[in-house]
Length: 481
Image (tube, rainbow, N blue to C red; front, side, top):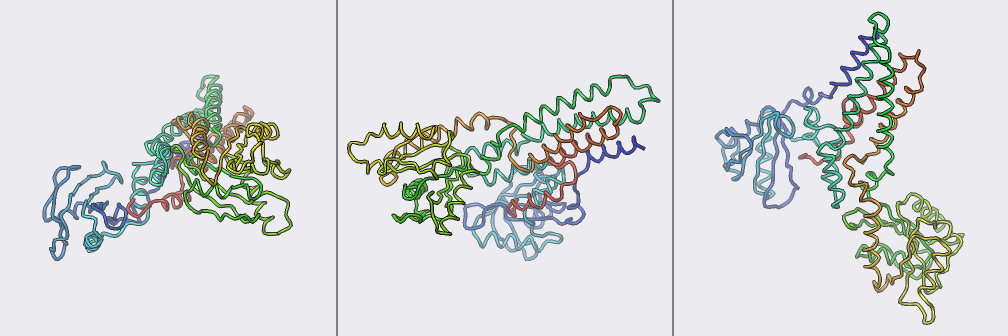
């Protein structure tokens, strides 16, 4: 019984994929795959068993060579009216993005042209407009891409900085799939050996020490996964944006700095203390890194309920930020109130603002030394957020700090970028730890722990039932993807 159950589980883990699209969505689908609006060229993508029929009926001809561009007149399949002149490409399955027969029409990008071509496709039998992310989903169902590659593709489409592009491209090209599948296959072999010992250990005289090798393999694998998880969440931080919190007392110039970095009036600037009540965010591209700079409420003792809530939110944001910058005012002698000192540690950077308002006789270097002694800050800059003096130097050095902090980790070809991946890897690690602590006589339970570990890895790449993940994932794609 155990042997048949093990074989069934192994086959399920190795081969199970979701094929409901083949059953519930048999039609040939089409969609505009470029951005809507006036453009020089628009690409209409078609995928499905009847894709080539679109060429035959809308060009009054045929295409014999795949992946070769043909210049054709595009006609309405019923009226024969010429709609446009276009480049037509045919990609026979399975050698296409979706794994199905596919066609691309590279038409002129005028709104009327695009609409006329889409309307004509709608008149073809069993053709329909694609749903959001359906092309990518068909690629997954046809084993052209796994979940990690699809997530990388989604990130590539949404990448806003050079580092995000590099990270997403590596994942879209299988950077995570290869190690995860290698680990999973190793686990399956360990499962097979364990099940063999359960079923035939006594009758077939299986060699002694077989399970010792399984334990060694699992121990090695456990170490690899633990090392993989020990990455300081760099991939997730860069994918989502590096959180930089600007904190300090009221009227230190935090909102002025934010506006200068954003090059627009993102936050209200006023001489009235407590003007900023909530967290104001601005996205920046610093040296290719995505940075989210957050202006927070000024930290001071207050009895105003709304201001107190703003201060509470400021402290919360500081705790969750990746980089903390404390802004102090030089015209007030860079005095650090106790409530401000609470959020400063040796990982905090300090900016001494209002250098233009510094009175004669006050030594900037003495104030810098005073602040470093009181706070233990990593670095102290002086600037004038109002005039812009010193801001460029700050930005250039901040880029150097980001590169020093993240560059070496970003170079790792196998980097966790999704919280989902980390959760499943941690589940896998727990199952492996439980296996390694199991007494020798509990071999049946040990086999179950290996199965749980393999399933956890399989959920990352989509080798087991991941329906709950799919709807969320494909919702990130545009209609034509």
